[in-house]
Image (cartoon, rainbow, N blue to C red; front, side, top):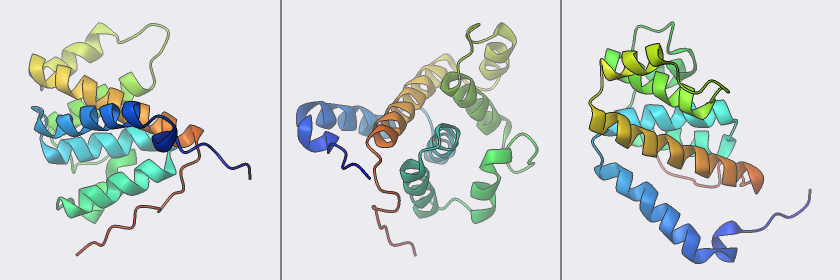
Length: 152
């Protein structure tokens, strides 16, 4: 396997600024459990093993149940998620996998029925952040499981 660039070392200022942007999202209007669900789902969709691993570990540390984590990929069929979480996951999926038509009005309206304008805006920045990290980590083949966090 070809050795990939260490993006954090090669672009330290950009890395620090992007990390600061991501860290600022913890103070957004989106609750921690929803941040975890959205982060896992976007990374699943993007196929970023490193990020899925990291977000699952974070979710467990934050108290998320194993059952709900295992249902994230099938959230539409699961009864374990609230209407607000479903709206957040809907928004995550549509922004992560944009079609040529963009976001249909009916999807936007359904999300607006559950989330405030501020929450939709904050959630959009979260999705942008997760998708950005996914693309960087996939491009540079960041090793999955590298972040060994100990779970209680």
